[in-house]
Length: 215
Image 1 (cartoon, rainbow, N blue to C red):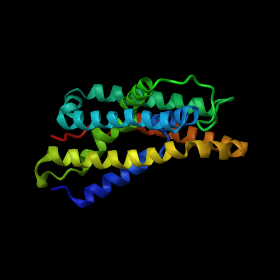
Image 2: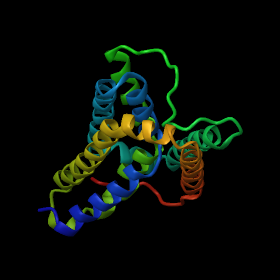
Image 3: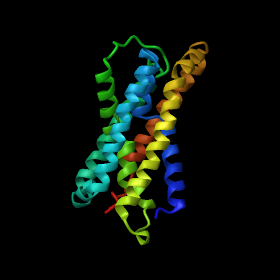
C-alpha cells in the first residue's frame, strides 16, 4: 500500500533532520553527560512519546486546523525559528559553552527527565515541519487509505530518529571526554552547531510551504 520510494524518501529526510543539531539533540546530550546514559535513555522515552503525539495528531486532523487557519501555522513556525535562533546565540555568544562540555546541572528525577524529553520534542519546530509539511508529500493518494500510509511513513521517521538518538545518547559521554582533551575541537564543535542552528532558524522563518493535508 505504501510505495517503497516513499519509505526511502521519508527515511532519508528523517536521517537528515535528526543529524542536524536541534533541541532534541541538545537536551539528550546534556542529560546523558550530566546524569549518565540511563538518564539519556529515559529522556529519549519522552522524546519517543512526543513523536507518537505528532504522528497521531497530524494524521487525525491537526493539519486540517492549520490549513483552515494558516496564520496559526505561520505563528508556530516563527516561534520555532525564534527558539532555534536563541539556541544558536547561546552556542555562538562570547563565553558560550559546547553542549558536549560537562556542566554542573541538578540531577532530575526520572519523571522530570521523561517530561522534559516529551516537551522538548513537542516544542521542536523541526518535528512540527516534518509532520505537517514533509511527510505528507510522500503519501500517494492513488494508493488509497491515506490514514494508514501516514501512520506507516510516520513510523519510519520515528524508527530512524530513535535509532540515531539512541546512538547519540550512548556515545555522548565518550564524545565529551574526547573533546575535553581537545579544547580547539570543542570550540569548533560549538561554532559548527551554532552556525547550523542559525541557518536552520533562517530556513524555518523563511519557509513558505503550507501544511499538507494527510486526510
